[in-house]
Image (cartoon, rainbow, N blue to C red; front, side, top):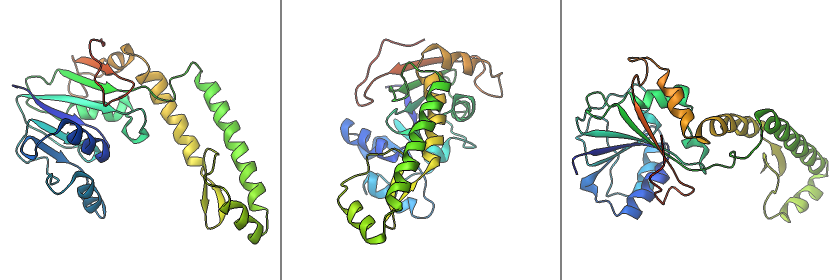
Length: 246
């Protein structure tokens, strides 16, 4: 195979799964991910000892994976490199805002003869339903208000009664709520994240044409310039669905 694949996806678990399912050998794979703090040990454990975490400057392999540590400010050189960007609809941290990070990734391969071609692989998400942004925001606010009310009701119990009540609950069937120190805590950041993800998914990942239109407006030197964007959509990223795109 003439091409070398440069795959950008912000999930070490996803990378490890691909390596396992595709039976990729260590000599054919390079993985560049975070090595700061506890991330180094945790990420290495996920990949396995046979797949050491590499550096952007390490020799190119046939298949090269990069997490967000390389999305910006990292120069890669490979004349035969082809850029793949993967967004898993089931993992919100892999979803990218095309107006920011997406364009940064597209400029990472500096000298590739294929740098004018980007392949975006993405799956459907829970946000791909027929509602407007205003409707989704209103619904999210309603769910958040119900979560706050539920948490307040449980937290108003005495310490003993609350502990007994929470011990009988196998899992919290309320969005944005978690148990912490024998109390229910409502995390409003999850609600805000849902709204942001809806904006990204509903207005970008839901269509095939919009990503190209968004990317093509960036002039040469500040983004993609004249670039061919191919979108491969699949309900399950472990299965390839081809023959669709722009």
